[in-house]
Amino acid sequence: MTINTTYFKREIIMNFYSRSFNQNCFKTVILALPLIVTSCSFSDSSRSISDSSGSISDSVGSLSDSFDSSESSQSNKDKKYQNEVSDYTMAYVKSSHADYNSYLKGLSDIAAKIGIVNWDQEPKTYIAIGTGLKKAGVEGTAYETYKKNFAGSDQEKMQNIQKGYESEK
Image (cartoon, rainbow, N blue to C red):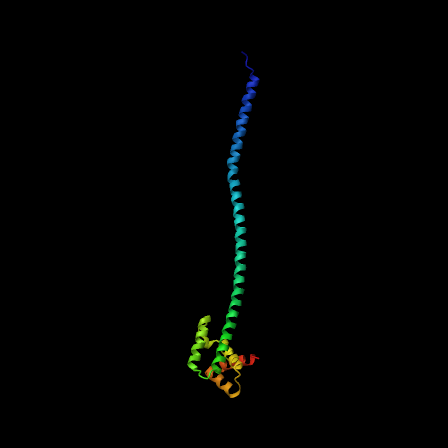
């Protein structure tokens, strides 16, 4: 039996290179795998950062809307408060059996219902009182007496009552 050594040598060489090639591919894959995983992770991280920045932007927009809504809500509360104080003052002045302490208690109740604690220190209270006096048709000496009594002779409070009185048509 004759063995073709050329074929045998070629087979050994091919087998060697084939194994060598497979080993090199395996080494390359093993070395490249962390890079591939890292880049996927980086891609996910950057997508997550992008999503987070979008979320932050949405939150800032929400806060801005809430602030605008809060300002609008506060403005509506102030108007409601002033209307109630004005109407209450008008009713008090027109009532023939009005008691001043009851009037003060009523103002305190209106303020508490809306969440105002120091109603007697709020300029809007006195502006509303002035509006109520005008709605009640109080004029002249009677107006000056009410203004002085309601303001406790405090000049700033009297000016705010005057401002409210003059603002009512």
